[in-house]
Length: 300
Image (cartoon, rainbow, N blue to C red; front, side, top):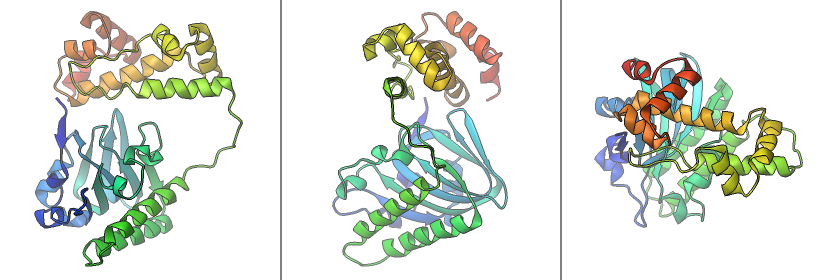
């Protein structure tokens, strides 16, 4: 099973004691101050019970699903992680500098109707990793230093101010996204967006007993109340890929992540991803990746 870590695995008890009286943990730390135990915890592929904004420099790699983001010495990265998708870090030099702001799901609702998951940078399909330059790094560092200073203050409304710093950090990150031409969405684009939301809602698979319900183009067509041919044309027009290609791509992405980072058997992974037989899964996986599931598992 993919493990779950809590905020107490990363910060000291005196900081945890700063829990807001109305509920919700919030803490900002310097990565240089991480204990050996906290640093070791970051290397475990797991889900967390908190959201995190990290400003990182050093020689490290961030593993998120089946993707790897490498940070080389002298580079800077701003990374947003949520409580739904598992991830881990690998620190090549044994040392990583920067800052991390961590808060639980019940912190933001004290200040806004939004949940953290409603914010774009914490969404499963949005950009969450930003490689930034030195000037941008300094701008974000100022915010993290303000958070550290404020959380130690005796100001009665400090959590309201910390919330505003979090929002400023999020909006600064959103401004880093490449500008795109604003287009009027047509029916095909709307349908594509609905398909993507529906597809993303099935992942990640969190238990061997869980099985994705929509694993065929027909199932998606029925759910979206459109003919499979119409859905296929719309997706092909907007993404360049067919329904089957997009579905297979996401299922195999999840399969690879489970093979690499969980202790589930191939049979359990096969079932959870909607295959009738493990042999059918093995055949489909090898056709898509060129490798048998057992080969991927042996690389762990």
